[in-house]
Image (cartoon, rainbow, N blue to C red):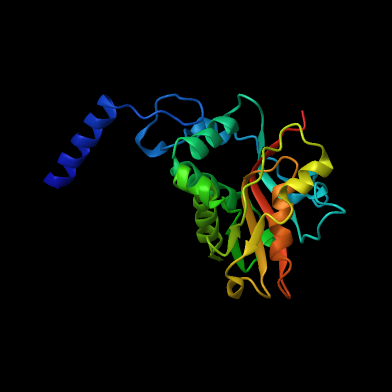
Length: 235
């Protein structure tokens, strides 16, 4: 009892001296809100694409690659909460944001959407970028989603074999050329014959996801679905 009180006092003092702010709106947080406040969570711009066949994310891949299904969790707008969260996750080493978003995403997904999934994998970073950043921002999303869905996951089953140039100002064909043959399956034993859920943080044109899924689909009896945390807002 005495130790728990001491711990509480130390925690309260730490919170006072170094206040924790929401990664979404930067307001001060209550003890049970880390790292996103209740207000931000309640106003997440959810897409609900997982409840709609032929949704906007699925249409990105029509005529390019055969997927079982695809969806995104949240709408991304410039300067919005999702951009703030993605920035914290991707550039400020706040992997707890990835864990929380992955957990929320899996909880919001209807069970029928993922019940036939066998294994969850992230879109990998090239080794040079992984070395400079120190982590793949998708890994925390994958582990949290897989645990919440009670599925297995493999963080290193697919590798990025070369770095791609920036997609900015490239046309559709140039984008495809830029990402073609970017990926290779280095641990096929985990994916052969499985329904793979491929995870990325944000989808825009879908070119990188298409290339990664194409590498996975070279394996016999393997199928792929795609889920991302964010996609561009339609407005």
